[in-house]
Length: 168
Image (cartoon, rainbow, N blue to C red; front, top):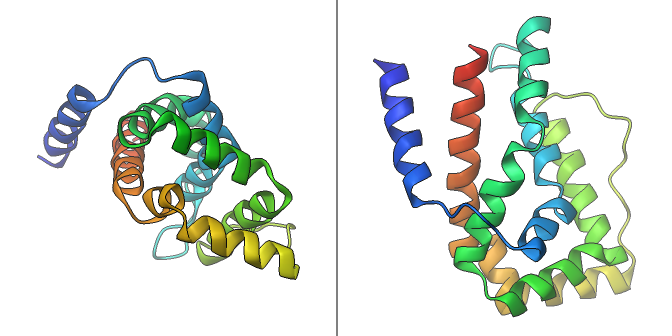
């Protein structure tokens, strides 16, 4: 029954997604390192502290390679203007944006109990201001709490369900 429900949700979400996202939307997904976060989440220990068995972990790595980018880029393209996407790429490619992303990835890894040697970056005053400006911008609000954030969450759920189903 659970598998039927997952497949029904996946089929519905697939029907809602675009198939050919723009190059810039794909680039935005890549600079945000969303696939890295998905892999961390898929390979994290469960609520009992048990990591996926090696064969399932190998399947999750194999199946997750590249699948998120297209789905999330299509979601971003539906929710963001081309100007928003350009603004977001500029931020995430900046020194402050790279620190912001690294902090998120390291924090998620630690919260999920996934070992990492990476350290949370230290923000300089300029970084704090750039991040505050980003979060308060129209595009920043869309990507962190608005429609783009919701669309990204749905795309991640869809792809995670597919990958988890295929890997057992």
